[in-house]
Image 1: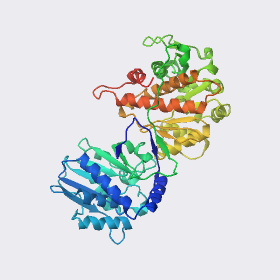
Image 2: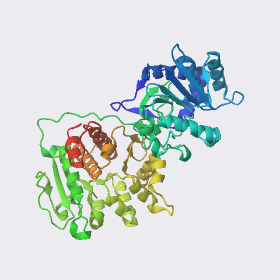
Image 3: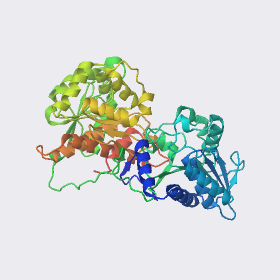
Amino acid sequence: MQRVQATQSYPLYGTAATQRIEHHAAAQLPAHTLMQRAGVAVARLARALAPHARTIWIACGPGNNGGDGLEAALHLQRPGVRVVVTWLGQPERAPADAHQSWLRARHAGVQFADRAPANLDAADLCIDALLGLGLSAHSRPSNGPLQQLLQALHCSPATVLAIDLPSGLDGDSGQYATDLAPEPTQHSPNRGARHTLSLLTLKPGLFTGAGRDAAGTVWFDDLRCSPALEAPSAWLSGPAPCAPRSHASHKGSYGDVAVIGGEGLHARGLGMTGAALLAGRAALHSGAGRVMVALLDGGELALDLLQPELMLRRFDALQLEHITVVCGCGGGDAVRAVLAPVLQRAAQLVLDADALNAIAADSALQAALQARAQRDQPTVLTPHPLEAARLLGSNTNTNINAAHVQAQRLQAAQQLAERFGCVVVLKGSGTVVAAPSQIAHINPTGNARLASAGTGDVLAGMIGARWAAHSASSSTTTTNHMASAFDAATSAVFAHGLAADGWPAEQALTASLLAQHAGQLNL
């Protein structure tokens, strides 16, 4: 058993792949072996998480996830500890392994009750063994008893340990089933710590969407089984190795980045110059050799007094064919006027914010974006869920919204990558990085401190800087442009989140501070 760490990379397996792995493993072992191993693993972690618990309540569903909980119950029996099981199954209808564990638990003297103990406190422990992967409607017990147990788990002041998945969470998408999601009022500061022990495989849904909040600290036990020949559904990203910079180098060794954006006040009375400057500062602090900023502000700003190293340029003075371009940050409507030449000429292109919205609204720009891939001009798109929805819906009559994207984050990112021939960074909790014909990565770093204006602009600048540096140090005849873009995106997303994870809890994190701090990581 191990605690999942952001410092390592892990293969992730979706529901269908996990079920195939389970069936293959079960066929190689004596009956009931996997459930017995699962029960031992759960009991071992439970004792470590709550060594002084006087009461342990285990909520068990009717399927094999409930069987794992029943098996754990008999191992948790010891003097001075009250183990109470609420089981929603029926002996005559239970799967064979779960029925066997029910018999073993009864023989061990485990106490059964219809509801949660009334006197649970912060020192106690709850174990969620209600659903696991068994989320389909036909496998659920009637909603009334299930909802009551889920409410007790969501509101519990005691530590909660979920077996395999928090009940109601989809292992593929990281989203709750509509009727099983916790109420906002159940996210109380008095709730106990949350842990999840993922068995056999790690599931993508634990690390993206609502999964990160639901799962809490994730632990993993493969139950001494190999995934055999099953390919991962995704990867949980780890930190990228960073080669030390050579003493015999110069600014040209680390590439040029040009940021294009920052619509001025004169256009619509909505000045967004700061977004482009933030992206430029992030690129500079992330190690780009030179950073140029072409503001779409009508020439209102000639110098960034806080960052004079930024080189302000007119758009028509940029040599787009020889630089890494970051386009769209604060671009507003003004970015539409420059997108066509940018898509045609930029050697390497990161598209963010208003550039994405402009492309979603214009079929000619969509065709120009697709043509870049055919010319081997790599592109990185950095949408948030609403921007991704606009892009996905741009060639269909279907009304796609942000909720649709959130319900299938991995698939949405992959669809965009395949359609436009780009690397796609779908932002949010558990950012997804996808590329054509490649297994997607889910980022394990970052937190709610990133939920403030400008942090997305900082990420775009960081991606541009890492990509420019990688390209400057690589031979143009041997570089795999898509791989280079993918590596730059995954490493920048990781460092961006890591900066927030390491930020002092008592200090506010602004985008300006993030741009400076993120540059100290993984250079």
